[in-house]
Image (cartoon, rainbow, N blue to C red; front, side, top):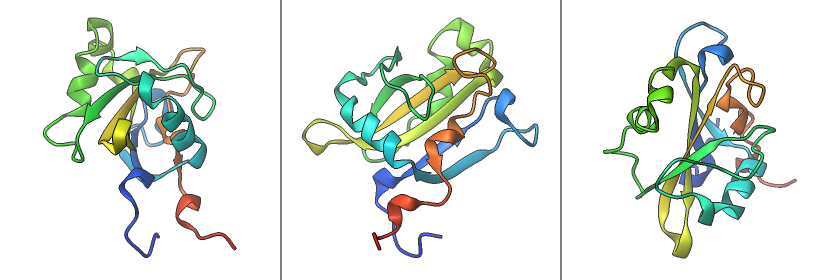
Length: 145
């Protein structure tokens, strides 16, 4: 849909929890990142560390745990394994986890990724859907009229 190359920070990936899956199977959503999500992550970039911690920001109406990966490429990191390593509780309930990978620029323009996770089936995120962080219309790539 973009018709042109998109900047790396405009495209994200999301995997919904079992509570947020419409087809009852794991599938990966790759689409544009919502502009408000990009802005909130940018504003809180210094708070995203190399260990999982609750991000003190609402993203599309939900709270997420976040951790940072440095580098322009996600490889050799496996976001699923990094999430499973967070705690035995998370590892034992991976199907309930929603996970998003959002490319970012950190201090001094260094490229990296914010990994965002939340547990579905809870009051904080009933449907466990990080797909809400994405914009399927890719408004961020459309030039202003």
